[in-house]
Figure 1 (spheres, helix red, strand yellow):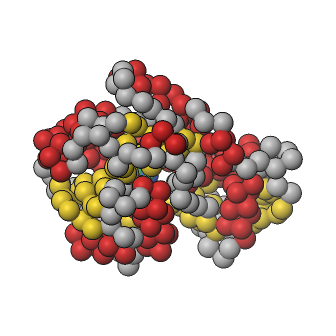
Figure 2: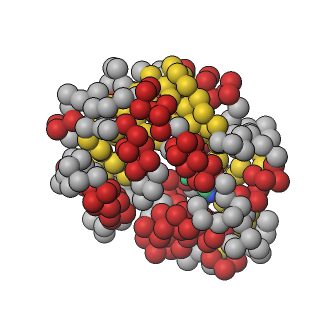
Length: 320
Ligand code: AVJ
């Protein structure tokens, strides 16, 4: 584990994550309150997201896994051996073995901002692939990342599964794709998962599951704000809401005030009227043309595109 990686998470004198506090204070001061979705993923949030991938309504993980399982020969042919696989937001790396097993890579570099989770995932992976060098990097991958020197000379494959790109508005998604291109370099490839536009009822169910796991995932953000930023948000007075925004082709998660609320975060006072929301996540959905436009704008040329058997999810291979 690189010591240097830790420098990416800047702490102030009180040990508070500066970027988190700034994003929350700015976001809560907006007319439409909003907190960037990346803050959903502390260790508890990352675990809750893993739980979401098991709920019956949340199809993306299973659909993407089906593609990874059924297209192994395609990956071997189109990607080939000897690359350093750089996974953006490695999470618990459940999908990664399917890719690594198919292409015979030279190294694996998981990138994540949640350090503990990252290290556990990296150890898991290293145990599954003895002999494969694993170099975890704790980093915010929204900016270009300096990769470990051990992989500097290797051709790269970026792996960005799960339709995490869908959490970004187009401008941010393009910025990310461009910085990935800079991180990975000329001659690199990118294997990226992107969820597809479909019946809004199916989408809403996937983001408001009957077991309430997604609700817990969303509410965990308010708990995290209270814990890490000295907040007094009455979490039990907030309700999880999932909405389809047809204009922007995205599912939105919100935390809706069930009554008029007043609370503090880091010594600042905020108020919400009953029915007012904090917007906590966008999950954009795509069709083929919107996918290709986005990738091309980010400096990546689409090479191949696969769907699962239910036409619900897509995996795209693009080259720099
Ligand atoms: C982690 C981006 C894939 O948008 O589907 C799942 C996050 N939010 N349920 C998604 C999420 C609510 C998820 N990704």
